[in-house]
Length: 212
Ligand SMILES: Nc1ncnc2c1ncn2[C@@H]1O[C@H](COP(=O)(O)OP(=O)(O)OP(=O)(O)O)[C@@H](O)[C@H]1O
Ligand SMILES: O=P(O)(O)OC[C@H]1O[C@H](OP(=O)(O)OP(=O)(O)O)[C@H](O)[C@@H]1O
Image (cartoon, rainbow, N blue to C red; front, side, top):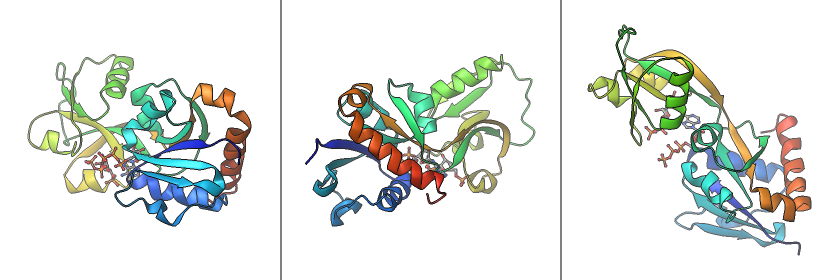
């Protein structure tokens, strides 16, 4: 067998779509690939070892080289700014980052509070807009912040818009489109270039063929 490739997979909503891509690319994945409570699964025939990580942590594992490659949302890559190569847009888990708030929020307010799971993205965005804000970092349920008076606006992921709608919030500005990306550790790319190129090629055929 060739050398092993270690892959960091994100738990949660991206996982199934990424697993479907791998299956379509004909990688023989083991029966326990749904992981359950297991965190590491091997696919010996494919020469691949997978581990399951929090989506926000995938780029950290890849940067440190404990994973050769990984699947991460563009939102995570923008927030984390890790030293990894972003080699392929997998075109899955599409959503976007946006600014939202209560309807009629006074935009001229001095240094409004902005709640978000993406403090770096929010800070950078408002700096580019020339607007002074106070960023408050939360770990989830971001839409709650303006409803209970913690923040004036939020920066968060929007997909269907359902969460904003059900909580009476409105989108104010779009920041960036988000899809999941294949990322690679720079040293792994040098040491295992043939194997990684083959994976990128097989996955890109599925993505470009509109099969993802
Ligand atoms: N509503 C959504 N629709 C589509 N993609 C989304 C949505 N929300 C997030 N994503 C994408 O999926 C990735 C993972 O989101 P997910 O909600 O599974 O994990 P998380 O919220 O970061 O982690 P956790 O819920 O475990 O704290 C995000 O980084 C983003 O790229
Ligand atoms: O536009 P929608 O389709 O409603 O999706 C957007 C919601 O999905 C994500 O939340 P998630 O489900 O990850 O929960 P969280 O609050 O724990 O981040 C995101 O943070 C929004 O709240």
